[in-house]
Image: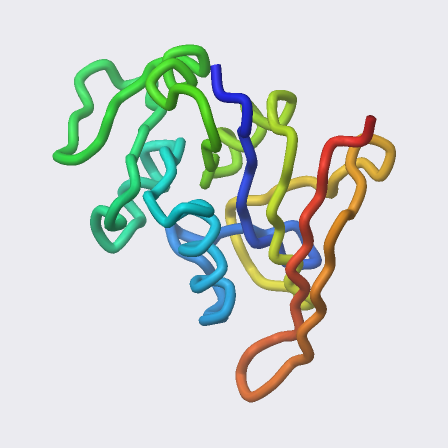
Length: 167
């Protein structure tokens, strides 16, 4: 089992994290942060656990990172994907060290009780969407880092927030 499991996602103020298989906003700094966090400190690329729909929404395989896809479909296959059919199987494939859980909503719900950290991009605007994340409990999570960014051009205001499980 991984000892550095973290969730990484962007969430609008109304809870939306996605719409029709895509992200309903475009914030280049968020994409850059996602890449940096999923590449890891030594820039070797981390195992990323995701659902099938999230895998399908990617523009292709993300370079230097492992794609562990959790799916109920026993026949599903995709080039470059490591396939798991349970949380335990996905964690076994990931191995020790840092592991990023990158979505979607059902996958986040499965791994939230196991996560030690959350890397959140808190979007300060509402968007239409069909995938949602509930707000985090202030008792269960504590903010250890927050970086606020003002709205500009066509980008809403947002904050990069790192949360750790409260002791």
